[in-house]
Length: 610
Image (cartoon, rainbow, N blue to C red; front, side, top):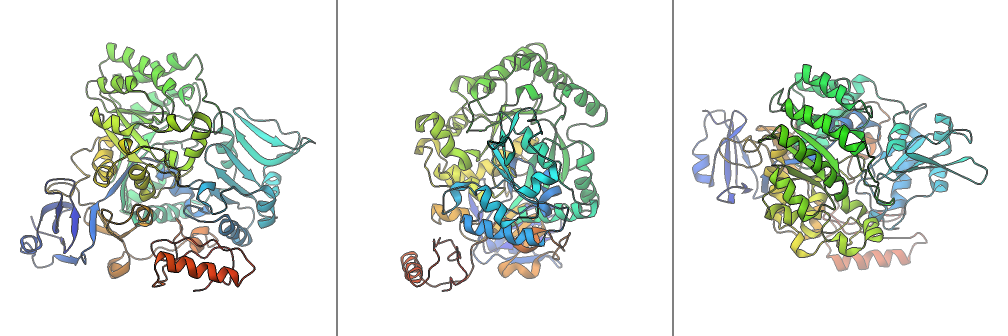
């Protein structure tokens, strides 16, 4: 087989033996050889593209076992992302600027990926601040799964008044006169948040295509080459999957997608699954886009949303009967399935159902798994192992660990979830984010959480015995996740015969300081040997830049995940901090410098200049 591409002069983490090689050869979208520079370069032929990696570290393409990229792509161009923004002052400035450029009747939407603990001020915005920043343009700001902030213009656009009743499973916060204040509270589920957001204007089909391409390229920026889409509320099949289907047909997908189908109507879930099994089969598609199975919600009565500001919800008495009907039908039709489950109490009841179904219709190698499992016990891990299940874990605790500790205590938080125990028992585990409406899609934030056990705000949740080393964490985010789309052995390692998905990193993941892991990006990303993202010294290899539509889209101005300034200050951490302190004495504005990999953020005033 002819060699299409050779990547050499690198430190390539293979996830195999040997652990590191210097070069790989790529043929027909797969790794055809891996070894030292000399032996791989001898494979060069006329027409082979040869890429010098400049001694950079290369990892297998990252694979998020649980996120929502289809929904994220449809909305990306409408959203103002606060992911990684280090101060509330900057976030409010962005909000004010975007409100000024957003035309009626569009909204400004900040939908997930942030927590107040990332901000220097360590607090959320107030309604007064939001209304001052955007007095006339509707604003919707989602905070985790617990609340949303709406400014006065959004309340008027939605028609929310003192006479508007609270929807099911939610509360419209009101003042003493009964008028909505602008805060929506999730009790106990996020239905009020999602249903309100769904009332906003949508992008045109052309803009959704552009939005999805831009979002997938944003994922490529962080070395993501695959993701398992967990479905989601207000994400209907097949209608809301048509954009990715069209991109696939046009050969414009830059992330491999395995899509789960998520029923939308409570109490009628089995009707959806019966319809889908007649028209669709798991595995339908190809290596770029395929149907994966059922979930993450199987029945609404079993969905225990993780709002840590509220007490753990008890699932209704109908949970077992409704869940058994669906799981039994899926097992009969050999459909893989996944189920959202935050709390051990829900997991116990679900396992009672699974065990009963398995006695009648053996799962026998059928890929099934739980998502999240923050408070799962060892006993239930044993039951999952016996039934051949897996667990997809996400960094949701990195964004709301402080809330969990406040409610349940630091001791309970030490194993939320107990990943080390899962691995010791041989349970398949895949890493991910649950982006984009709670956690950020940045995989290096999630890897940092796995390695350090820390929240975004710096709180250490896990002792050393429940943390991963860097190689282990990387394997969970690559090889581990491949099991969850029934593609184990096909991708996740840079070894002969596996898909040539890889990322060349901005710094050495294996040796940099732990806090710098969060600043990592890819400078060259390949999917099936095709370059889908390139920057820095590889910029000439980058695919053509994508336009942004509509013209007012926040991504056009701010991009996605916030970048620190790349200005090189030529100063050590202490010298830079000292310089910042000296500048603060000369200015009446407040200053909270944050040193990142590339330099200092400009926070809070216009005169900040080094």
